[in-house]
Image (cartoon, rainbow, N blue to C red; front, top):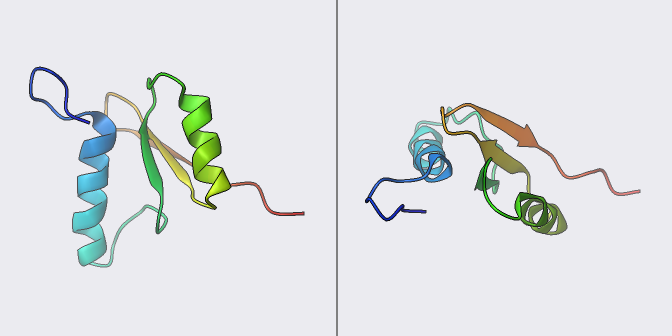
Length: 75
């Protein structure tokens, strides 16, 4: 996401980094992950949508740190 001042959100920056690192085969992120800003409105809904698609959710904070949430195992 691009902010009105022209800067990119932390999740967008992490996504770009993931692409670069995957080209070098050294990405710390799961394949087909959804990248979300930690302070995004409706974050829980977006995480749930990622899980419904079987994707991990990478939550990225403003300082660039991240947490990876994996979808629950199917019963």
